Image 1 (cartoon, helix red, strand yellow):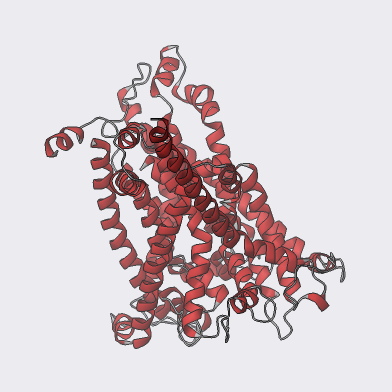
Image 2 (cartoon, rainbow over the protein chains, first blue to last red):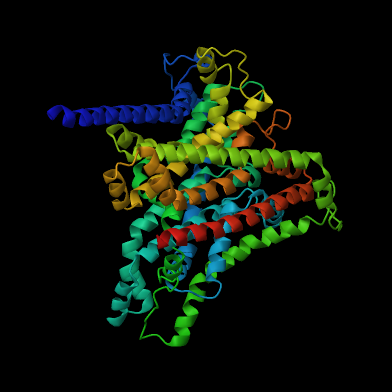
Length: 288
Length: 317
């Protein structure tokens, strides 16, 4: 009697243990693949010139590459300028996106007006449009307007990247927020604008923070716009990382150090706000 | 079944948005407000659509660096593009790249999400670093992989040789160049699919799974009959995003192989870049882009329509 009841639970337990083990092996395999390039590039960025063509993990780490890339050796710190350009254009794009995107997202969430669906689809279609299509006309236009290789010009085109993101994600946040609360405020005699500022905005603040950081990361990581529409003044750090690959003498450790520093700000931000980011990134699936 | 879906389709969920009841505001002003709020975004659309239409206009001129005063050539650019083998080669490369990369990322991403959903201790640790590749700029990811694949400095050669393979050539061989660009795309975007699938898994109701467990359904049967169909609307969103994005993928291929060797990874985007930026034949490059844009637009319209259908159907279940 006891054996017949114990037998299935025992095999069940063993099977559970085995599938658990298999699952963990699968996870380890995937994450080894996922993290290997990161570990590799970090290691390479700390290698001295003599070690750079060895594939071992054991070596004497040096900070020389970072010093060189940052320009401590030759005094000219062009890398810091690229860094600043990335920072200013990304923040600028986010700010403009928020100022324009919050009202639009609110309108799209609360009202159904003529053309609202078309507007939303147009904004989303920017996400799928090949950027090169607008780059030549933009370059011509920028030359005429004097916007080529300027921060203002970069902020303007990075809208293409950040605005759809801001509007689509914030719309879902506004939709989550019950309209009844707003209406209660209106019945209390608040104006529509004040009801929005006092009641709606504070509640969606976490959403705005999350979407701002996500938009910042997307703007920072964009390559094609700064690559084609800037040359030196407004060149961003992702573009300048390519510079170390050119020339006859490629110094791999310098390329690595440059890439690490260019990748660091979005990565640090992403790990800090991971919970919100994941929600922002999966907005499409959750909201439809 | 059809009766329930047709009644469920009329659910007020997103058909009728909450009516703004504002007794203090006149009807006219209320009717105007959404337009006023959307005006900046509309202006922005116009600001972006202007260069877009200028670009489309270039397709009927022979605008290039050597021909700055372009004249009207009608559809010559299109006939040139459509009759060049270079274009059709890049169509094949682009299509193969997009389909293979999306398929690999979908299977891997759903697999990783299922593993993470078990939420072992290891899963909780790994979930924190899942988004790392997604947050590295694609061009930087391409540079990282380029170094990783270099026979002189990278770790891939010793790994490949440890498994007993010889003749490792990195991205010098046409087939392997294509293979590795898929790998890099999958490296970056598998987490994207995994995140969406994981969000989907966590939002699924428990009761069908409990019922299946009580009935003693096997893991595979539960997955095939319950998990996958219920997860499909979520996965589909990820598939749409990945397919559309990988059709116009530029950064990874530009950074990793620059289209080579010998056109093995020359996608439409790379061709357009070479024509319009490298050779400064603007009209021809833009014609390439316009064709790609039109294709992407049509595909996305069909996919979004299919998605709506799947979503309303699953909302009715």
